Figure (cartoon, rainbow, N blue to C red):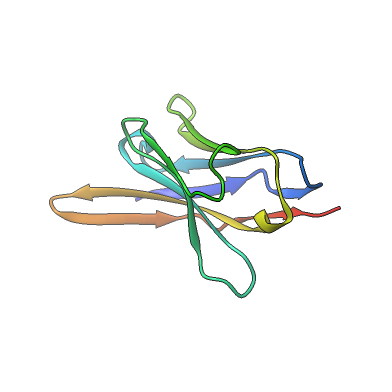
Length: 119
């Protein structure tokens, strides 16, 4: 069982930066793939970035070149560095950790952190 807690959200002006953190307890996060999703009001949850247990990363086209996902295994955390933020990045950001064991996928979600980009 993994418990995930996101932090680092807030209000930022367009062009600004934020770093989101996903802290895990109950298990070793480095053995999971981790993904950041976001959901804005009235929209479906969308995938923003992923990082595998091996450190490979992938990004949605809308955030490529602006967002960076990384992991600090010593701290059992995954981060999402968000630069050059735009109003359309406003959303609740969620952290997800997943692991496949004996053919079954186990997925865990955090509660989300609000990011608001506005002048």
